[in-house]
Length: 88
Image (cartoon, rainbow, N blue to C red; front, side, top):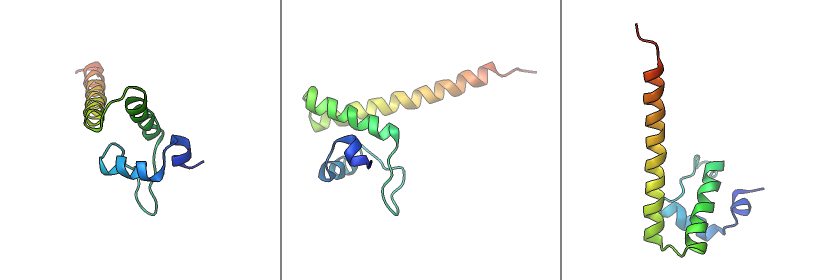
């Protein structure tokens, strides 16, 4: 099943979300490729807009914060991994 069907969005909406950089395909040639994380991100966008009534600017802010938290989790995991390495 293709991404549009799984995400329950139309092509025009997907194009807008890509233009807004809410979604970034992992591959763009020969065709766009999306991951399971992208599918989860689509669901978050749909929840924000459809269920919670968040406007486009608000969606951008929320997604930016989610990305920052994700990045910080990766940094924290690296720091903890380094701290656990034996010294000597």
